[in-house]
Length: 148
Image 1 (cartoon, rainbow, N blue to C red):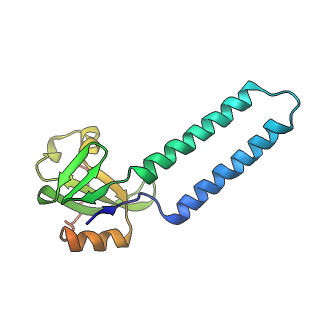
Image 2: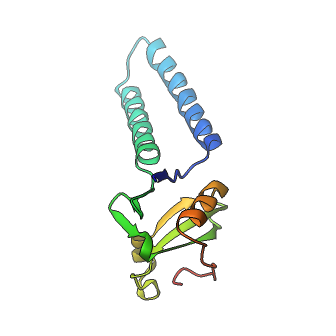
Image 3: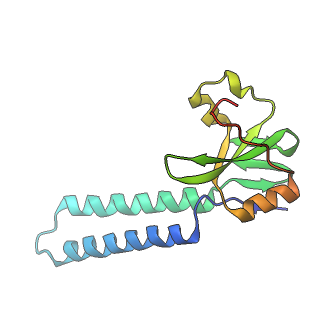
């Protein structure tokens, strides 16, 4: 079974896309209504378009995937046999997140930067938790801290 873990809600996606549409509309209006075309306005519109494309590709086409009894995200692969996961609050952005970790990696001996390289994080949604409990097993209890 294949399951994608998107790191955004539909409401967040709609808000971000509406913001891009409104900025594109205003900037294209000012670009096309001026008699003198400024290179700065063209560069701004090009950068906005590139950022929208990068955002869509990363969040919509490259999400973490559960497939063939492993969790994958970009170059990270964690087999289900060595996987443990838990739900942790993220106080910086004020939402909970699901953390996937590999049992073979000694997280207690790693720096915070290396921990982030070895774990996979997604925004918490109840449907993801239910899927993981059915397919992988129960979550481990979060004890606090980053090196647990």
